Length: 307
Ligand SMILES: [Mn+2]
Figure 1 (cartoon, rainbow, N blue to C red):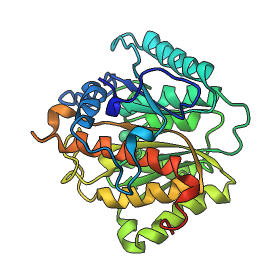
Figure 2 (cartoon, protein in one colour):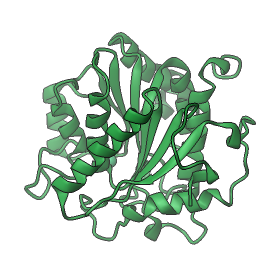
Figure 3 (cartoon, protein in one colour):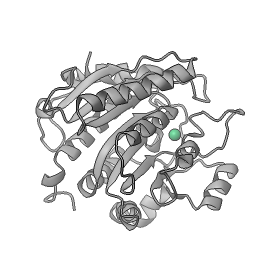
Figure 4 (spheres, rainbow, N blue to C red):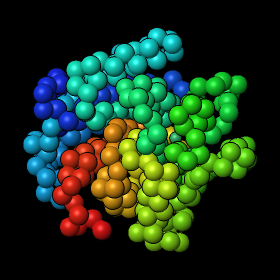
């Protein structure tokens, strides 16, 4: 079934295109099964009401759900090629859509950002914002370059990504090798506790300032569900205390969508097999996705309530 029963083909007035990457080959935790998350998160939406928190009627949003990329989990090159083809097919059908990827482990973000960047020429105003409990900056994991623990490092190596346009937010489980690399390269990350030290408004403004100081106007947002506190999002591989609440992330996203063009986003690392029986984590994921869609949709209308 589709996300919120949205249509399944791109047409002339489509603005948002949801798709899944059911791939968790690069997780470092064998118990985690984020490959089943795209389908689970879709299923959840059939039990949710049809307005967003701010009263936007969900069926009126111009969203389609075109299904999953065909993945052969152990055939890495083939799967990467499929993801690339999938994205180019989306943009061939309609150029000005916002692709939304449901993972999968965090590595899925890498081929999506690459393919997205292939779709436009001028990358000067483009930035990547990653919400994550982790830096994911290991150079290698288990002697391999591709892993959900190396994803930020791989992004950073792309020729259009640098310390001025990549920001990692919500971190609180950082290894020494990652911290050394971040320091050496001046990669900016905002630890989760700073939200409480600064207060949410200043914290959010610091995110906005980071990108504005680099003249970034268009951003890709990657949300690793573990940026949220495990008490509200237990269904993920690494349950690290001290994460954001749903409302904190909601408020940050609302303000970001007002200040930047969010040209694509993803939500990764939900593991339905580790979730509670009431599917609280998948529920949260579905909510976040539709709320962020409505913020982007209402970009020019949220001045009144999003300070
Ligand atoms: Mn991650």
